[in-house]
Image 1 (cartoon, protein in one colour):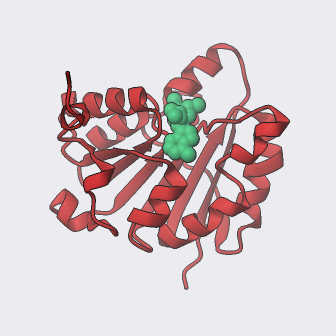
Image 2 (image 1 turned 45 degrees about the vertical axis):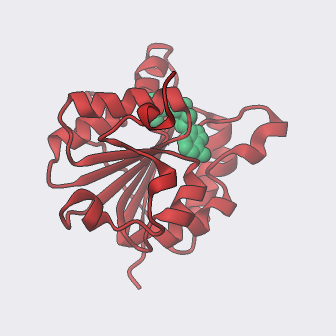
Length: 210
Ligand SMILES: C[S@@+](CC[C@H](N)C(=O)[O-])C[C@H]1O[C@@H](n2cnc3c(N)ncnc32)[C@H](O)[C@@H]1O
């Protein structure tokens, strides 16, 4: 039988129950490099490609589903991404409880679960109630990037929430270097949905300087 400790995909995957509140990024990563955070990393395609390509940036992934968290953490380990750490947690809770204020240079959210049924819309992550957590963790000038394939989520929540956040200015969306030709970001879900011919919706915004 496995113990809880053996289930933690160390050294990349961290046990949320063992973490200090708030985290100390410099202590965690052993340097003062900027920190980019991805919510819902799935199989970890984006975070792994970015962590490999940009060793002077620290990457932190939050993933709720245990299987995906273990898969992505192991992938980061196999790729030698010493500048990456992950945790299995619910993102809004983790941002609020663990992430130091104004400490994130980029918040990446790619293909968040759309919860298409009307009675489940309240479970959507990107909604006005989530924005205080974003406002708390983004550094001045820090960026949030969101991509979805889901028109309803885009029109009902994502675009109005990001455009309506007083602390943000909408800017041009930056395609990360991991995106292949024609891609917005290059995650597993984007590649799967692109094969189905779905359109994508992308937005980026920066936190106003105070
Ligand atoms: C549709 S998948 C997209 C995965 C990946 N970003 C991609 O594009 O391939 C959404 C992922 O976000 C995770 N997720 C959804 N809500 C979350 C939350 N509140 N906190 C942490 N992870 C969450 C899910 O478990 C799932 O792995």
